[in-house]
Image 1 (cartoon, helix red, strand yellow):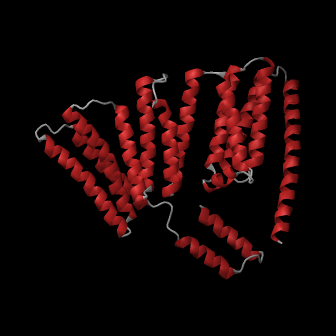
Image 2: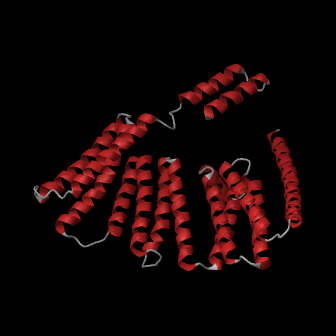
Image 3: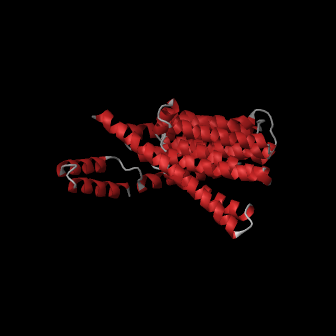
Length: 367
């Protein structure tokens, strides 16, 4: 998809005389020489690793009653060491796909080894501790092998750990365990930056969003939803304004930070609609929601498709909500749309003038 757009843009620039044809061909060849971001062979190799690891885990679950304990422990340790050493050998030869498959087998087999040892020797402990140890091993493996695939496994294990806690305690805050999801998410984000597994960052961001939603379910306080709105919009602004230090980090991380910051603000506004659903407060929250959508589009709408479409959707739904709840007549509804349209048009005029001014300043700086 991107190659097609690139080829069309290069052809257009050549036709307009902005770029020599030889340069355009060289640029396209350079792009084609890069390793593909998606490879069916790599995906199938990782799926094969998952299936083989599942087979090992099922064998462990069968309890191997006829096999002595030491033999069982030795066998699982041999599997773990063998696949990791094999992965190291394959990486040294440049066989990254096969190495990734072996690393998946080794990481998943480690969880089976923990269960096996605890089962055989009746060790005290719980599933939560097992998930922590398993996650820690995945993190170490991802660092040692600089493996984006294992970083993704660590992301799923972080979700698994949070799921185990919810299964055990539901909406109760018990001990230090509730703090582990954001800590694990931060570790996964660190692994993403270290291994270059860009798509894995979504597992971390979604874990943070899920944890914050669960946190609200514990308290259901107006102030907490307000904090989500304020912090989400503040993070969006900091990630969008070039003069802030966070903007540089956000730019390196792509579109995700701004999108999830805005998503958190939208979730907070959605929750406020339930807490303040009557009278003037309801209208005020509606206006704030519309203003937040317009601000998000002004800051990120041009370059960030996720923020743009989320803002479009939230804006449209809010307008329909206000029209159906706060306005009792067709004339009133048309008045609401009229004033909203005038407001958005005024904001658009200001944004267009600012964009022109920034573009002119940029051209002067280049000269």
